[in-house]
Image 1: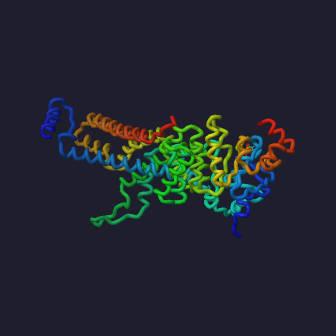
Image 2: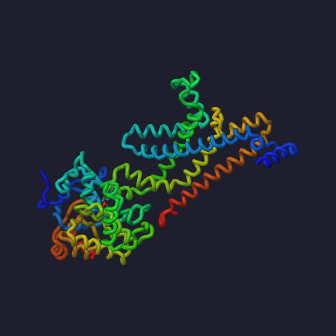
Length: 248
Length: 248
Ligand SMILES: Nc1ncnc2c1ncn2[C@@H]1O[C@H](COP(=O)(O)OP(=O)(O)O)[C@@H](O)[C@H]1O
Ligand SMILES: [Mg+2]
């Protein structure tokens, strides 16, 4: 069965995940269509990071199924390289390679993993630096960049692999308030370009603006989900209401 | 030149300070060849022990249990036994078990001579420490940095070669520096299996000239300078590897 883009690009079905005796995901399901932007919100420790880490197989799962463009992730013979070419990920702590310049950080994966031609990769990297508005910082090391700048390099680094879907795990949570917007703007640009995005975020205004669909998780289950307007204005579950009351 | 030799001959005649390795062409030849033997032995052992260290630290993280056990066994064995005993073990125990070859004069000789055994033995000796030094450096690399590389599709080998090892080396350099200095000093043990390195040649010279005091003072100075050159080189390397905004 080959995947076509009228099917969900990412399809999570009844996923269960435990760390030892601790069950962190207790049957989570969601679908993401091509070009869709979904936001996952919920209290700390509810399993948001774990869920998106399962999608690119950084965590294994104990039950259920995750299909990425039809490829089953919950499979002992999973071709991780094939999966990770399709799925880009950006982390809360940027996780840039500290011994490489901004440009080198972006160039590394296409050179080493895709074995692309160096001149072409460099051209691509310079284009991406521009796209995340960091011209002039090509030769800076991560230690010489602000948090917001590092995070934008990290986004460019993921984009260099030309992924079909991007995962963002609280990518502005570690930033100073004044630099949050520069990163959010970059993500909005991406969403506008039609990139499929799965975001974990605490930025409610941003979620409302950019998301096609919001999921609220608590203690390993999806409590409630819906289109942003419905979700934010007419949340039904008391847990959602309480959470939104605290955070807004 | 002749004038200098003459001066040292007179020095001996007038003061009794006998430095034949300067004025006597035969002893000078022995000293020079001993010096270059020590340099050759040191450089070979330095390079091999660092390669062993890098390979061992890689194998220590192998998914195969027995590979890890063998590496750890090797480290224990070489760290917990005297290097001189190791050298004798290789030269006398292993060396005599290996097949002999016929030399140019039709005689039988061991397939590996004293020099080869000294290189092997000392490289494994220093290599055992280098594995531990690199391992501690690898432990300092955050898991999240490795995860970022995994998410980009890096293979285990590329993660090691291009991410964790380059970062580990920077952390491990002071300890590596120490161990390599020790290694150069330990090359004098090759004397015990008649490898004609510097100390061995010095011994030949003092046996012929009965000038132990002069020879020992000279040896101390030469090793002091030799190790000084190594330390200088390592410090330069350390500085060259420095990344703006990273590390102390
Ligand atoms: N590697 C791990 N080992 C054990 N427990 C973990 C691990 N990662 C996460 N957890 C636990 O799983 C739960 C969900 O964590 P996480 O997915 O990070 O939550 P969130 O991102 O929503 O804050 C927490 O209780 C956390 O302590
Ligand atoms: Mg999290």
